[in-house]
Length: 374
Image (cartoon, rainbow, N blue to C red; front, top):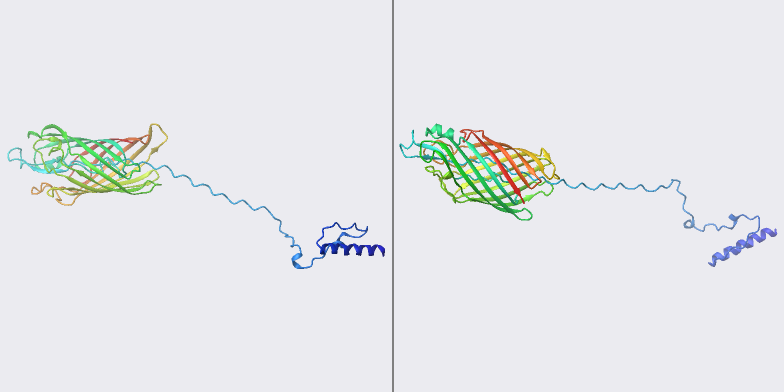
């Protein structure tokens, strides 16, 4: 009985201390009294300890880290188009008795310029050179006219320069040809060889839109060719034809998909003299990067290409009408060649062009081009 009474007294003292907020060590328990007897029972549901979760706790799994997006591949610099432009022809009537037959011959005029010849829709800074050789120019037409002129061969060297601003959004350039005429004929001035400087062209180009990732773009511009040279191709005597200022508004575009690309020009080739022919020129080129190594210090790319050129007269349609000296047929030419890029700074290319519609204005054309970009 004495032990039980002592235990009850100790419990009362502990409860009194807790009620008064005093932090005192409880008196030593008498031997034989369990510790559970001294625990205070919970007074409310809020005082009850939360039930133990039977589900074992595990560390949250790390969320997968998204891989960084790969940097876009460097944009390919699409090579310039080769082109196809032969001199535009004109029907010329010579004085009676000067040649055999009715006295009509079809001759090349000093007018030649076409925006798709050794040019790109992209404004850029570069210096360039073109060589064009045409074999049997207009021979098919002259045989039908019976004029007697034959084996007309011409070649043309073109020197050009283009300057663009820092972001390649606008450029302007100059282009000057040197023309050489050679033919077999009995008329003085039509036989043998003659060479002279042609008309100087001024070219303006604006970038309208560009995809910075793929390099695809749309551009437009204007080319102006005043009659700064002689009135005949190569300065040849007796073949002077139309010679006036030419205005050529145009649009150009490039579409790139990896190593494959398409590019083209559409232009209106309009003389200020409406007695001459107005031409709608459409050119499309397809190319593929057969080899590419931009880290190479030498050959960095090999790019074969095929081009289609459609030249449509908007007036003076048709040819061999003696009443219309500016008569011009619809022409379609195919150009195939290959570009060699060097260290992404310079390039050269060689190509071969043939007409695929009649009358054939020439048998074939050989092209060679060089460009230095800066």
